[in-house]
Length: 339
Image (tube, rainbow, N blue to C red):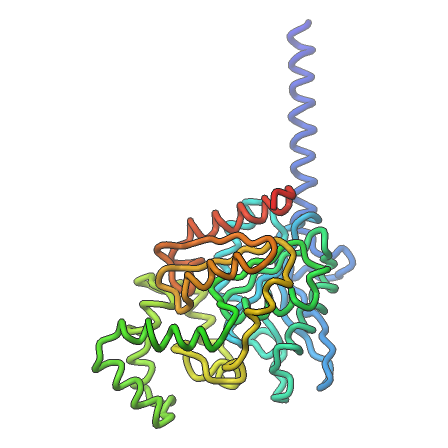
């Protein structure tokens, strides 16, 4: 009789546990109970600007009131697609996170008014997205890569009262220093004849010449942007979907230095104003100087540095384990008030 009683108790415990897990999973995959149609976590968020009202594409994965992470892609005007690698790692941890195409990018509205493409306007957009996803200082993390790192730092300088943690992946705080590193370090690693041909095309502003990318892809992009022999599908799709008009206006025609509206951007002397926990990520083969990334981690009030010894500008792909483990550990440490 006693054995039957113990078996009943055990079955009851397992049943309760399964019900709890089922309920938890149900909550995890529910985005908005008020929506009449489920769209796999996708929502077009309204954005107000001086040039009119538009919508930006977002996709939520997970449900965690303690940790909400907004991913800021690079470019400007690339897409969320090359950041899809976070799905596997962040879902394992039970994080709530948002893939997001900034205004002008492929899955969002693409207005033609060039006055929209400024840092301040993008920062205001991120703040509107934050409000729409109900994130706040107790749970909101921003993770920006490349141009997304610029946007993340600028957002923190204006709205850090709404942030719990900041992650800047592969982006220095000074565009002139970025350009100097490209000229004085990365360019010198190329074969002289290759570099000369690239510089000749740039001097002529012949950026539409197919030869320009023929030279850059094997000699620069595959060395410093993503070092995987076969580029990930998400990166290939993002590359096809880039809004080149906005990209060229702000960044310039290539990742080999910077020459657009962002050419003189520099907030290095303001990093000390960032008081929230901040992770700076550098990589050995990056287009950004990894030593500068380490220096930046010491300039903010609560900085942590992560170095990816096998990574490039997209270390999330080509030094994935070190990158992802470091990011996840940082988020857990911030969540547990260890930083």
